[in-house]
Image (cartoon, rainbow, N blue to C red):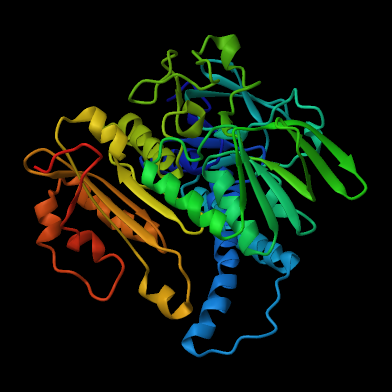
Length: 460
């Protein structure tokens, strides 16, 4: 008989925490989860899922415009923000209920309040002040949006936590940041009809992505009417009768109905009691764990964005699953962080897996680049000039494919399948020998033949 109230206590009911709780309970463990907000975490409640719904909504403007090129007469279209928010809320509530039902099915006890650690095997619930013991504690509290607390007027900005539930649609919005969230919401609001400015302190957004994708997306967003300001940041933000006025480092004042900060996220470890227990926290605020997600205290583990390893929902899910299989199912395995596919749901969107060209050239002596740019078939009759970019990166005499990058419609769907080939260590010849599916945009990946040579590079 156990000396603890639970075998596993999970702090945070996001994607990683829920998966760990469900799998552990499936092995017969007695499991509890504490969540101070809503079950589902950032991804389901205020992240990937509602964002993708807004992405879909924003692209109907293109569909209406393109339809005329195919003989359709479209008139009188209009957009209502409150209807979209209501529909989004209905779907998020359905998903949260599904998550709750899953936990109930596996007899996981859910505490709807904040939990903090008071010892390596004990947590305290904030509202009830009840103390609960557990043999193992899993921290899965995710991340939180960053703002600059020293910025005058920072109280006037919104973040991704707020943007989904705005009471009124912002006709003018300025978005600060250069990562996924910034470029995605710039595209969303532009598609919905807003006047959009994107400001980023660096010289080019989407740091870490392939340079061709970064340049191609910047050009496409600019062509769509999004103003992009680089090398600057806000110095103050003032609230006026006409809205907000944000002064940037170059001296210009940007007027807007809303100013959104998307300048990154930080691990959500503050005031959890980790420091007091001596749990190692790095300079970014993340829980330091080994490849089994275990902290320096043997009873305390952590998964997902709170560890700041690879901050993607599928990664958190995989980490939670590996943790539960290893500790409760006696099926030890560790997460492989190579060849993780990812997407940026801008318009046009990005799908990518594997090394960028820059990373590949740093890693290998012999790198081969294949790429092509073309107008998708749908764009031709629609009269749209936006192009797709497809890029394959191969290495060595065998031309093993180590990277695939796509910019354009359905890039994410295409790259999810390409990721299988990259993970299986497919070579360029395997792509070449695969029959093309015609007519499709994706067929370009198996018909690219001509190597692209960098300036000064000799043909081999």
